[in-house]
Image 1: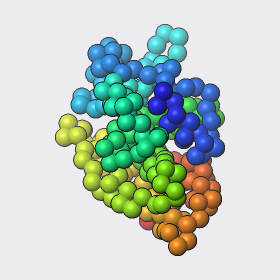
Image 2 (image 1 turned 135 degrees about the vertical axis):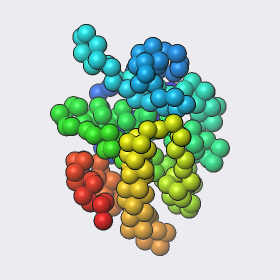
Image 3 (image 1 turned 30 degrees about the vertical axis):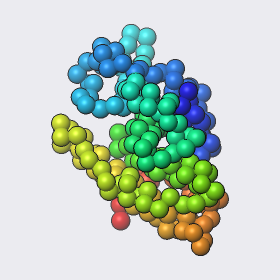
Image 4 (image 1 turned 180 degrees about the vertical axis):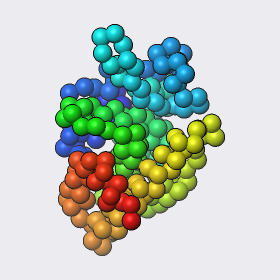
Length: 217
């Protein structure tokens, strides 16, 4: 399944495997999501990770709309990432990222903030897309990807003010960090993929405070 391979890509990229598989926590039907989380179901979104308190503990779930998955199965981004499947790839990858980072952090008893989840997901979308593009195109760096992911963005008008500020802040921090990665390690005349990877793995393991402190300049 495409989601499982996305999770494997993140695990390999960060050298951060987790015990749980995203497909085992997957919900693809909107009605089922609303039954599980009620008013917490975000209107108009194709991806959502949710936590539900149940009698025997906390339930984690990943909602990705079935239409998104159908399109990804027809046009597999892990075989060929293109303009026509990049948006669906990023939608699904965001859910996989939230789940993977949450599971990795919980296994280490680390607290995770909503901002940290969003920031890491933004970095994950960029870093995993770079990894796929360069692998699929004989090492050629994907010019214009940074603009596509961080500047050509729109937010749902129904978002409350706190959520919108969190998304905007995560986008701003991630854009700054990924520009640093690009300029420091990935420019064609001085591409240093092994250092790019080492830096990504360090950042992944930083605490929320360390990430924000590093980027709030």
